[in-house]
Length: 97
Image (cartoon, one colour):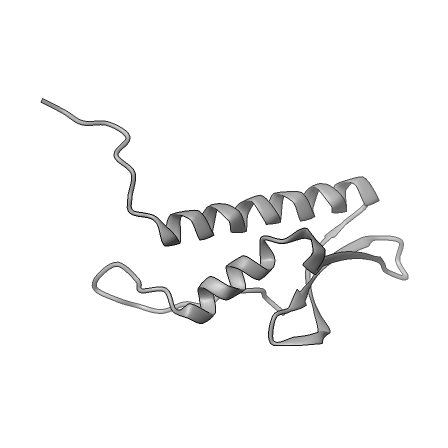
């Protein structure tokens, strides 16, 4: 299962829904993540489904617990950035005269 991924087409900037913003907020909190060890020895990172607290969505698999924890931290930072840029105006990084 893929987390928070969908495709669509549009002719202008995509408009985020309230549901998408809430999903980003949910994924940006470490308390909503866990790591489980699979029978093959790999570690799987999972994020709690925001719509169903009893369901966990598998995200990545790593060979080591350290790699899995780094993947969780990177995912949290990713969703924090998505949330920040979704809620704020575009930032001017350079102007020309």
